[in-house]
Length: 201
Image (cartoon, rainbow, N blue to C red; front, side, top):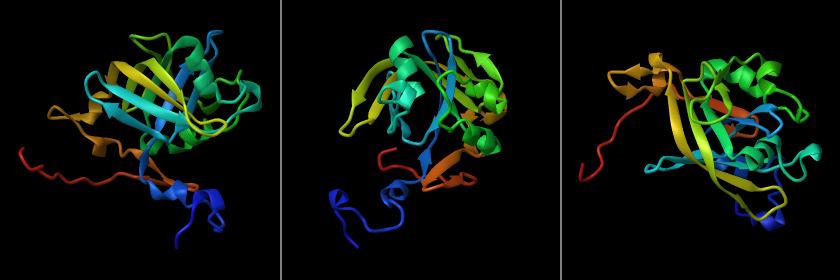
């Protein structure tokens, strides 16, 4: 099968959503200028640079009460900070609860019963028991083609690692089984790993 996205795919659901998989999930915590807090998952998320460490996430739809975007991007525009929380399999249901189109005044931490903790380098909350959390300062927001496509880039200014995820000096993802997005309504979980030595190592 071949199709041009501009012509449509003719399938019951868009296959593009399932092609680039698995995708890590960034559980983005933000705080607006008014102090209102927000927590929402994004599967268009990744690390993009080592030095200085930088991450990105993309928001691709809008809410009526946020003028062309979602709460996360709107809050980051106001305060220029955010925290990326890594999602473990055990948190799948509460993460999913925070994904709803809630009103901007809604505190998803409270809505889903997620314990908050204060960040160290930015004025924002984080998920207290997340395996890892990345405190970030905004570097830029880039608008992509399309009505509500915004990519947010941030420099990591603080890193929280849960102690039980450190094994012999290595952050071991098998200690918490990261949740990943597959597309459609499908998710997966990482339960095994293997190593490869690159040429020149």
